[in-house]
Length: 597
Image 1 (tube, helix red, strand yellow):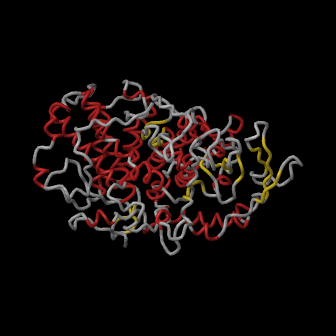
Image 2 (tube, one colour):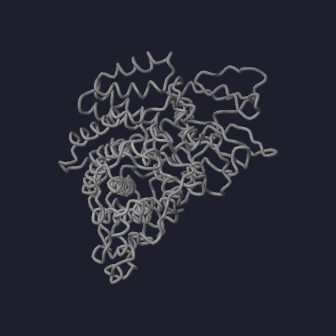
């Protein structure tokens, strides 16, 4: 079973950016952790506890566990949070590009901003300690631990930059002179992270090359290289800069040619290593996540690990269960889902469609047993997350303990395709895209859906557009789309297009003119699983008297469509959240908000 280990007494407790209340003389005095560092960080066994402690802040209620994972990444052209249409809701404001610095969900001294910096401070102490008192060479335990600390620090910074853009750069433990720091250019931080991950990759083994890297709960060389590739593409991509609009970086070190070459090289290293691979089917990826199969060597490169009583991945995103039933003692799930158009944007033969988009919930149980029941056209659930696929019965009130999929091999293939297309053209990108699509379609469909489809992408623009589409089909429900749209320079355009498409679906016009307006359903022999007819385009004939019917043209209204992002706001002018007011107020004047917040 999974646990985040905390070695008490090693780390300065609860250090966050809002540390102005700590007296300078305390910071200048030898802290307990400093006194012990020579012992702790010269011993791999003791250092392991400190490294594991870097992850602990992710499990706090207002950190990744209950705020960052459930709320960051919405809304996009493929995913939306169902709080979006709650007028005046601070939770909804986080998704509709209207978050304010005093947002009650996030304006707390223990929110994800503070917890990320707590994790960074712990990583900084570990990195300093191992470098000072250990001998962190490649092939040694202390070398591996240093690589892990560098990587986990990069994870925190990657997520800070995604959410806030420019942030304070802290790459050394806090002292009296560095309590208050202004924001640094994200370009500086990106370059540090890319260098750190380059070093980490020399220190950490490939998946299954050590006992530590036999689990996807621990970082490994494949994940490190994948994260480095992801950051390289983000650093060279489009993004909003203070007082300068949306543009690419002007730093020559972060040019497209340099960063895309770096990303392609890292992805090819992973691919050629043979240490990770696509699962045999798309469904297998998600069954393994829900079954808590944490063995390395499959598709998962790294997962944020949660103990059974921590983590709200299913609690937030699973197919909704309206009551305690045969599959879960936790009546939750379903705070977000795919846009109503997404099911119809998939090719009907794409095996990812029915795993990604679920049109039903589990209704109120009778005698502790519930059935699937259809919901409205406006409400779809992420089928990647299902209590009914778990091997244990969740009884916690708020937490399910399922890990969060942070990176998987499919992203490596798609990043390689994108970088190869940019550098060498569509023919260089084709093999990567074909490999991904081969898994998505049955053998009988592959000549047309894989080979012919990809071979017809003969221009760089056509291949890029196909990669943008493939990203949607592969990653809907994983909250990766927002950063991808930002770095492609497509966020605002794709969100506006999504509103238009939902209106077309609502009115059954344009590309959605042949979507049926009536669904027919009955229960299979198990008396809980729905057999649905009428979901596919053109399925309009009544299949027989044994089926019941449901109108499939209601529920999706103008207010819901417009709630994708707030009217009057350009998402490209609000690509990032504001820094929360509590941290502005306690920054000794060092922190300010940009972007007209």
